[in-house]
Amino acid sequence: MANDKHPQGKPRTDRWDPAALGQALRGLDYPATRGALVSAARDNDADDAIVDALLGIPEQNYRDAAEVAQAVARHLGI
Image (cartoon, rainbow, N blue to C red):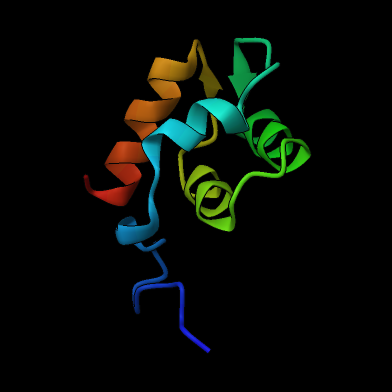
């Protein structure tokens, strides 16, 4: 079975699909906390890579999807 984590515990960026982030967060009202983002992603049956990436961003209120995408990109180092 393949390991989906890098040794440092970060999600693999080769599985990252930025377009899927929007789908994962559809229906979410902003501002939203990290917990709300993760819950929305799970409710929308997001891929584990997206949920893991959201779990890795700082806990704060995010104003919109663009701010979330920037936080995820920083977390993933892309």
